[in-house]
Amino acid sequence: MSQDIKGTLPDSIVLPRHVAIVMDGNGRWAKRQGKPRHAGHRAGAENLRNIVKYCGDIGIEVLTVFAFSSENWRRPKTEVALLMQLFMDALKQESARLRDNNVRLRIIGDRSAFSARLQRQMGETEAITAACTGMLLQVAANYGGRWDVAQAVRRLVGRVKSGELEPSSIDEAAIAAELTFADRPDPDLFIRTGGEQRLSNFILWQSAYSELFFSDAYWPDFDEAALNVALRHFAGRQRRFGMTGEQVVTQVEGETSC
Ligand code: IPE
Ligand code: IPE
Ligand code: MG
Image (cartoon, rainbow, N blue to C red; front, side, top):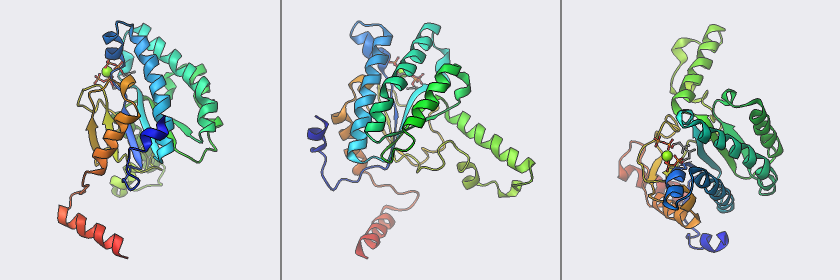
C-alpha cells in the first residue's frame, strides 16, 4: 500500500533529510472510540511501525519521534506502567523487522530512570540494528530538550575542569557538539499531531530552524497520506536562515548552474 501512496509524491520533490514527530493524540483517539487510553497507545505504536517503514522507503535519512517526555512521569502510575510495558514489547517485537528493513535504532534521552530490564532491552535492540545502513530511527524516551542542553553543559564543564577546554572557546558549535545527536543534521521538518501547537520540551536547540507542521489528526490516524501532506508543505517552503528571499533564490540558481 505504501508504494501506491508514495506514487502521489512527485519524483522531484525536495524531501527533508531529518523529520521529527511529536506523536500526540493517542489518548483522545481512544476516548473518541470509547476505548481506554492504553488502546490508543497500542494503536499509536502500530502506526509508528507503518510510518517508520514508509519514511525508510522514501529515503528519509533520520526520523526522530517523541515517545515519552521527561514530564510524562507525571501521568497516573498505571498509564506509565503500561507505556513501559508497551515500550518493552515493541522493542522485542520490532528488532528483527527493523533490521530486515535496514533501519538502525537509537534511543535518545536519560535512560537511567528506566528499569534495568528495559535498559537492557534498549541496548539489545540497538545492537541488533547497529549495522543497518538505511534510515536512523531515533526514539526519544525520557527525553526533554532542556535535559539535552543541561547534559551538554555538564559535559562541557567536565572538559573545562580537566583542562581540555578553555571557557572562552565555549560557543554555539561547542554546545551543539555535546547534544545527544550531534552527529546528525538538525531536523528539517518538525511535525506535531493531535491538534496542539506547542513544542512540549522536545528538541529545543536542534529545531531552531526546523519547518513546523501541525496536524489535527490524532497520532494513530496520521498515516502515510497525512505524512505526504506534511512533506508537500515542506517542499513548498522557502528556508531563508536569516537571509532575504532573493538571496536564497540567487544561491539556488548558482548551485544549479555549475
Ligand atoms: C501521546 O499521546 C503519547 C504519549 C505522550 C506517551 P497522549 O497520551 O498525550 O494523547 P492525548 O494528548 O492525551 O490525546
Ligand atoms: C508530548 O505530548 C510528549 C509525547 C508525545 C511523547 P504530551 O501530551 O505529553 O504534551 P502536553 O502535555 O500536551 O504538552
Ligand atoms: Mg498529549
